[in-house]
Image (cartoon, rainbow, N blue to C red; front, side, top):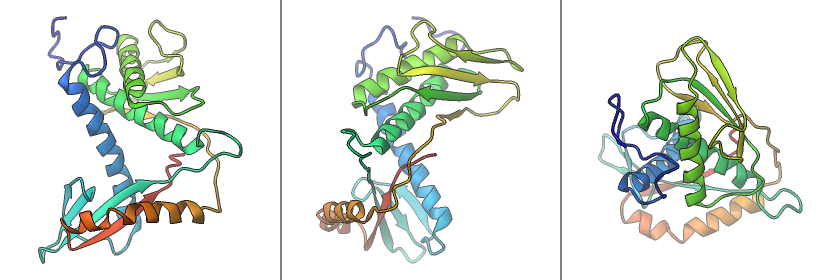
Length: 231
């Protein structure tokens, strides 16, 4: 369709298949990297001896920090997931799926030039989803939010609206208090696992196999292990 109102070229959810537009792959990679940035910035805030310098995105390792002494410190990031009793799918993996959908939906909303708002997504997911399904849900959510955006000073709750994905059965959009940037959340309750030694040992052992490749691009490499509760 035509590009109205100065909106960015953003394919509508219901008319274009995932992957049919090069921007889709770029946005998918971008929202994964944004989540990694969120983890890193939290760690940076909590770690008193976090190295100072020029932080750069990288692949192997995930980030590079170039210090004033021109030392290259790499940071490789990995996530660990717990299983929830006899449940086949790890609960944290489901939570991570929700956050990835939320971040991608917010990016698509920006692409549609939707006005900034407080948006909360309430999920009914029972299992993790593959990347294609996550992107499709995110695009549909962004379109539903865009099509049902309340006027400034108003709020709305969306349930069972046209094209609203069943995986996100409630969406709240709040513009009572104006904001200057998009603020999206996915409120949820999580379960805390206190005995996670085996999970961390497994993650360290797996990443140790990549240490040699990482050290080809840096002088030393840190491993950041994240247990993504988000709640």
